[in-house]
Image (tube, rainbow, N blue to C red):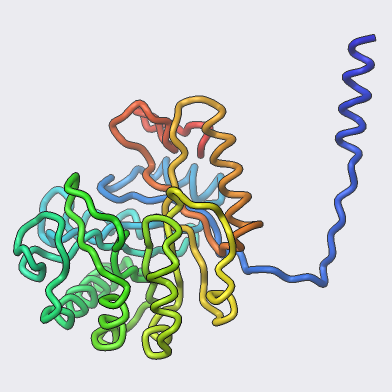
Length: 291
């Protein structure tokens, strides 16, 4: 009797109707992906599993502030870009900071970009675009900075106020070519920066994709972004935990991102890190359920 009741309930649940109207068009889905920041070159096995078997279509890489570092210099991401491209993926590159000589503090620690170095920063970013292209690993999208609204001493960052971001876009972004431009990858739901950019016609004209990260906010659409024809990407998210509850939290975040916020893309954070948190890869570089 219990089996019959359970079957009946399951049948009733599964027989619910879903109505699809092909005449209604929402956002274009650019895809899903992850980041190899600080990871170094990844194996062909990992790329086949993620970008071949599972259909990932976006890769986020990091622009190191130390171009020639043997550990994490610009060369480190070249193999990753080539592998992602071999599966038809889009690649976007994000700097966490400018080189120390362009910053107010003149050191590898958290502080703002010097305002008299805006052109130099734009030229630095352009040199990265050129470097990757010359090495057979061209990027599709250039992000101007990671989390300009988040201050921390835990790692090297660089802050932009909304007004500073607008000024940079209006005065110096014209020096960047050969790639789409993304801004501003804010830490969470921070409408101030996005609104400042979109409310200034000159600044808005320089931006192709508006991005934000998924920390500490509720998913909701950015109406003005869509009205202006800009892409709207969620470019970093982490679901903490090692259990299936965290996996379902990730699934819900992806669903809410697409159905509530009307994002065009969802990009998870690291492949893995040296903690007990379940990431896309475990310590043995095997796929976890979050993949």
